[in-house]
Length: 376
Image (cartoon, rainbow, N blue to C red):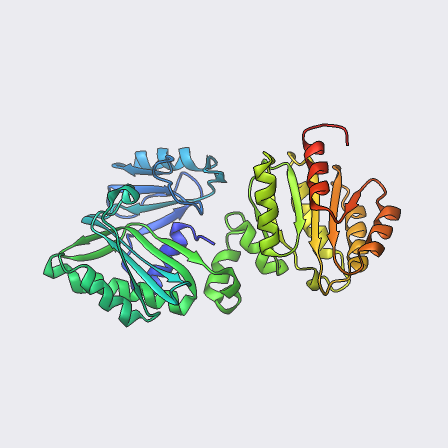
């Protein structure tokens, strides 16, 4: 999960990485800090804000107010802008620095470029090095990678790399990126912060958990995970097909299948049937989230059960549907595994209009016919 820049920079500051003086504004009347010029940045958990109009350089307080007012309440790359970061503009030469977990290499990958900024992907100057997952190793590798930089910069940049790596270790992060890293003879300043959190580790990281909980509208999916204990990620707020699925890999495969057919899945879901413990509450929660979107045309339930008894699941599903008055679209269920015959019998009695099948192709074909308005 990607943190917004303000939270990423808060983590940077906790770990001694210099950041510009800034304030988070939720209305256009917030005064900018210190002397200008300033940067106004829309706080949404997505990259590419600059090219999408989500970052503005302002020379006066009036320009800050205008930029903040323009961004707040707008939508940027699929996200509503509820807050802006207003900070003093940093100065210096722009560089790029990141440290990330390289699972395949069993270590950290440090990446450095002498050409930071919005065109980093096209610069062709980035160089990477795989290191042991140790801050000292990252700092040593980075010191070699920046050998061509001025002498006055090298120890400072290497120290920033060391701090980034230590932050990854201590906070159990997946990625920490600074682009641009402003470098001058007086030191380094992080012009931006891209920090990717491992949600599976957040329960061991109270600082990260607090960051997520204090911004329920920005981190909606992460808050669902913290509160409910399973993964639900909204993919497209205008999606037409709500998914009630278990198994991350199986769920992603289903999303790919639907997308290849030209359908628009609303969400990813890994509900983990073993966590239900005889209660329909989790299923009801998913159906509530799905039915909150007016674009919904159908719900596809896809459960491949191992330990779970599908007869028990079918009873819970029927109860959840009966308890969700907002669910006014057809439901198709593909149920495979132990207790499938009993599940079909239960749903035939309690939800007679529902197609229940073990055949994925049949389930997808029915969903497609519903979405396209063709007779079943």
